[in-house]
Image (tube, rainbow, N blue to C red; front, side):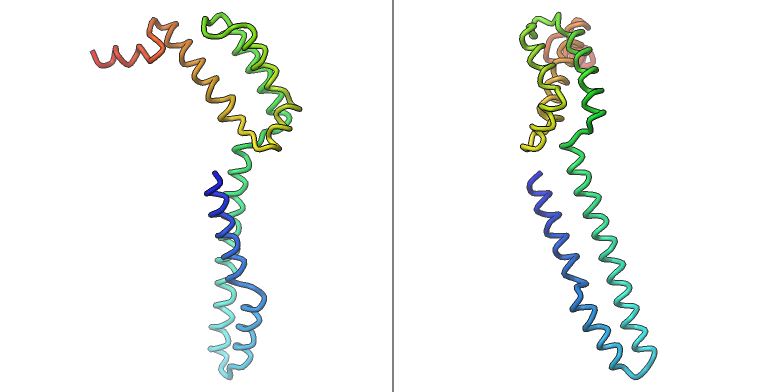
Length: 160
């Protein structure tokens, strides 16, 4: 993720530098020095074209920054929904021999609005920290309920 942010920062700096005030001023001065209207028009077209390209690049960088931001943040409404859903899912799987009641309570208490917001400010990625373990617990429970082992008994049946 850090590499992506660095890359986006570089692209942002390059886009901002390409059509800087000094570049545009120089081009306008060049256009004013030209005698023929056609030559002036070409320079003005170049300025407009470059500014539009830079605008598109900046918008793309902004969308990518937003996508990275959304990967690690969650809204208050989403947290409340997440709390309810995780509590329900954890209660369903709390009969699992791999999960004891203490672990269930710790997991539920981690999915708290104040806790998640504070942890996000510190760089916490809830999708990796909570989503991945829940996915593994659910997958394990599903495999066991289908009569397979923890390592995906269903895969062995396909190969037969």
